Length: 197
Length: 196
Image (cartoon, rainbow over all chains, first blue to last red; front, side, top):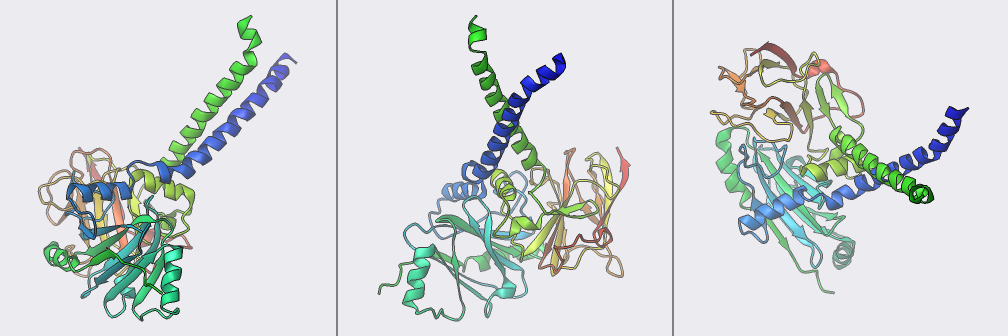
């Protein structure tokens, strides 16, 4: 009897502990993307700052041991990133996918999660022409063009006003790296003014 | 006297502290265990296709934010990692391994070696992986990669001085079906040779 009494006394406290643990667990998992100090956005932004690039394309250096900007990247790739801020103006990305190289563009929210991705397979006539904006900006653009987008243009609504676009081109052989690095210089990333109407 | 009077408050305080610690502990455990749900497994190889889609689950988002990686989009490719050999024994830097074909269908693939934190191992050849285009193949198209701390002929990858490492197989533009578990015999076989 004594043991049962003690157990019954202890039970509500154990349940309370588990309840609090469950809440702490859920809240900490959900808050992680907002609070993690070294997410991909922070890593790219701090690299851009050290090389002194405030806007446009940030060419990432070749991936070498000890000098990786992002973890788990493929060393066979030549990479660049465009860090955007949509709080005032929408964003325009243009790039051309030449030849047979694998060319991937992925669009990431500030916590690093992906919200859109395309490859050279879906480029139109070898060109990427992408408009990024928040819901309000996209509506203004839709209204200005009466819903008829230019043929090659892709419009994407971004979930957060800050984020980045990763550009990755596969260098099939090490000797292709220099050529692809040169090719990535033609990529343009810039904010633009909303059409007035 | 004092303790008796406030024992309920003391207990409540202990419950809160215990709950907080237990909650954070389970968070760390679950974030170290992979990238959330729906893992694809093929022998030693594991991929998490759900990290590459817009509606990824909260665990996948939390892991990505914490490690600082930028996942591939699901339509771009799939990333498989292996931290054991084909018999299930953990990979050990002191041992030599050989990786053999086949590879699953993909427009391109790369096969490399990384630390558990996702960084590369320094080595004199500056080789961190092979691609479907630049790997040396046998007659008939097959290949094998020698993995050792000591330099080898042919395709060679080195874990450097590390004890733990992973192999990472990236399939670009792959038609692999992510709704069913892939067959292990379509993935590279990892065989332990001898240990130092």
